[in-house]
Amino acid sequence: MAVDEGDVLTVDELQEAWPILSPEDRVDGFRMLPQAEAHDFFLSLTALDQAQILLVIPPRERRLWLRMLAPDDAADVLQEVPSERRHDLLDQLDDPSRREIAVLLAYAEDEAGGLMSPRFARLRPEMTVDEAIGYLRRQAREHLETIDYAYVLESQQQLRGVVSLRELFAASREQRVRDIMEREVITVPEDMDQEAVAREIARYDLKAIPVVDASGVMKGIVTIDDIVDVMEEEATEDMQKLGGMAALETPYLQTSLGAMVRKRAGWLAILFLGEMLTASAMGHFEGEIAQAVVLALFVPLIISSGGNSGSQATTLVIRAMALGEVRLRDWVRIIRREIAAGLALGAILALIGLVRIVLWEKFFHEYGEHYLSLAVTVSISLMGVVTWGTVVGAMLPFIIRRIGFDPASASAPFVATLVDVFGLVIYFSVARMLLSGAIL
Image (cartoon, rainbow, N blue to C red):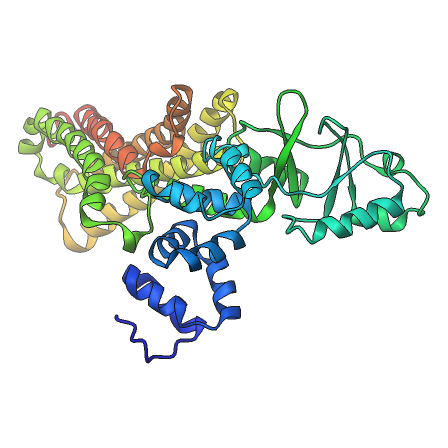
């Protein structure tokens, strides 16, 4: 879809067409917006989209848009820019902003220091309430990240307390800030992982949380809007990993075909090699299949049930880990719960399978005179395979976390492939025990 200079685009039309526009057409459409609408639209874009616009527009316009961003947002944009172009963008900033952004870029992107904004409301403990309100009014003109909380700092920038605007306005004008501030402040270290920061904000229901270094010096704040972006990014990454692929670094429609293939091919190859073990297991029981072809009819039913139960357990445990509901030390409790759940779920499927075989034999006469033995074999196998699947699916994230990797790497296809192999062993082992002398 091309954007002609004579066209008139509304913000809604541009947002709808944005994913399919080329970078050049995006810039053309963006420059056609009225100034007020363009301002809001630019701030609503992702850091990657903002970076792509800034790299294309003329330097004079680039300076205006870049200076509009808060330091933490500008740092995010610079992280999306090729390293050889960052200097060009930094040159567009004034010295104080350049120093602020340079500090943020020194942190890892997924650390509290990389998320924080260095612009926050500051007060001194010896100020009166009247002085504090006047001082906050002057600070508000400096594009503070938020002014819901004011942080009380000593002369060396060490955090001593926090006070809300509500508390300030409710206090008498002559009171000192130190007399009304909250001294027990929830903080996070500058190197804390972004997911842990998100859990702290959610746990204490905060709008912002201060970031401090090892000596208690306050470096900045992480706000709830930053955390919303983080959680969306983390959830997207986990969903892609659970689907059995490496996480994409760019939006789907902006990811090149080559990158898409590379992200997906590795896991597909691993899963393909895993499924070869399934073929090997089938070959091991070739004699049983040759004697009773009817056994092969239930192979997809049984192994898919185990894979599905394992995928369910994996998804539940990974999500519980992400929310901080489950820790490594809880693995014994989890395995007990999943064994019980697996047996219950297996019993339900076993009953359905038993009824299905009996009814099909009654109406269609498909399974021969030993259909009851076959039904019992399928039922017992279902209980075993489903229980095995739930246990494997629940424990695999713990194992992966224990060795230092992301539990989301325990993708549903990977769990299903692992369960398939052992599911066949369980099924044919049960058949060998129960059907020997009958149809085997």
